Image 1 (cartoon, rainbow, N blue to C red):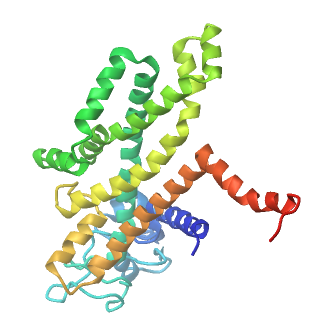
Image 2 (tube, rainbow, N blue to C red):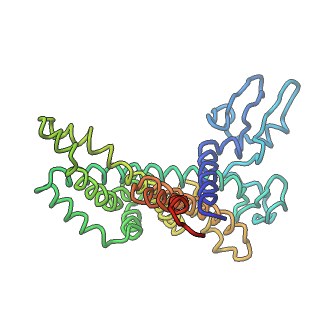
Image 3 (cartoon, rainbow, N blue to C red):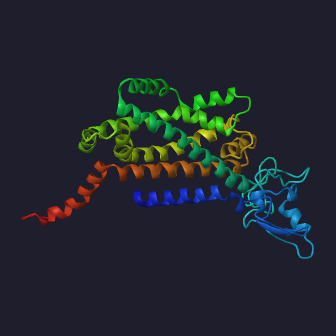
Length: 342
């Protein structure tokens, strides 16, 4: 499989994961997509969770259907990520396809693995996107100000980068989450954002220093354009390419960090995460499905984002694009030279 085909496959995989993360309730839910019960019609109760259906699930509503009642269950799995289906005294850990309605099996609490997998995609990718927005935004602003204004601002940002860069992000976030009595998603995002911004700031600072010396920036300054307007209108758009590449790689790293925190049980206790699913496999060495499916999901997302980031880097780097152009054109150019031989 060549590089271009592998990149297209990675884009398709990331797009599929993004769709799953946005619509997990339509793939696996303990409430139907739509239903008419108790004389009332409910649209998308799997998303809104109305109080009238509190304590109900798809199986119970289907068994209680009366004349004129109907339910439209999710097409794949009619179980939620936190709903245990095993009865008391029955084996809770079940392999794939061994229990009715559980295509990927169940975990130690009888919860459907597929439901937890698709709902975990929302947690992992959602935290990855939000954290990337935080540290990319912070790093871009600080790096741009440091590279454009220089002086004291540049010195302060450079010292902060030098101080935080040697410390592993996972260790710092792990310490912050462990010290908090009740870790939340907000605290995780803040901890990741305050430790991951240094790489983006270093890249943006270097790009701004390079662009500032260009003729069109010098001309804008000579015409009396305000410095902030020069930074926003002329420099920032031309420095955005490496930021997009850093965001793609950053989301992949945040997914790994979030999964590691959940695996160590120092993440957000109320969330459904791929890392939490991996931690359940430690108590059941023979339950391969508890390790295989969430591990495969993490691998696909991280590898796909890295491949997409590399493709963006190659496409947005004019030096690489020029090199590729010359490499493709060179044989035809030699063929036209007088006296050229095979």
